[in-house]
Image 1 (tube, one colour):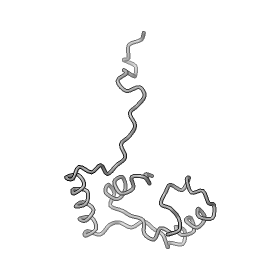
Image 2: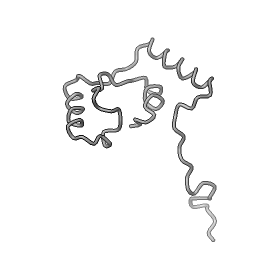
Image 3: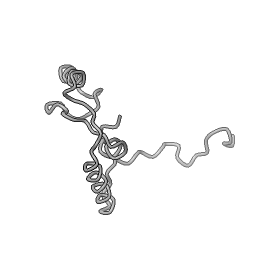
Length: 99
């Protein structure tokens, strides 16, 4: 799951969000959480139901759509651009000419 671009990749695309993420745990991918106790706390929060996924309400959907539209009109890049492939511009696949 995308944590760096969470708003764009998850909230704006699927209209869901995470409720009650523990305040003492940074919102990063779980593999990058360095403290095992924080990871255990996060797992426990999801297992007990205190932290959970919830679909957005109609009002929240409209707010998210308006924010995305405003960002686009302002020319603000909401998502970190992907790196260019190292073999960009090179013909690949079975039809590539052999040298």
